[in-house]
Length: 156
Figure: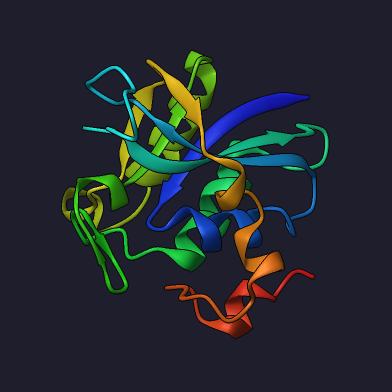
């Protein structure tokens, strides 16, 4: 199994969507690539993300990028749906350079590459979100989600 981290706005919907994808074996809501130490909920610079464990024999980073693009607006800086702020930026983070190369290749093949604001960066730090954020939409299906329900449930 391999691990990659996807940021796509509010992590509740991103986790609910990603965990339904073929080849995904585990997800965890968290925050990545922040600029401060975590003290009493201070997550400056962190992107809400989903730690995604996947089987590379079943699904590739390119495949996962395609799925991510189903649920995000890749041209929207620090905003997805009604969620606004740096923590809602879009991105792909990994400790494996080959994951980042594959993600960058996916982006560079798009005609609108110069307009895309999805970060592709090495993972510098990661913090697991509190239990209340883990699988939130499964427990509280009426909570707000920026992903339309038909897309959220597309691969179930």
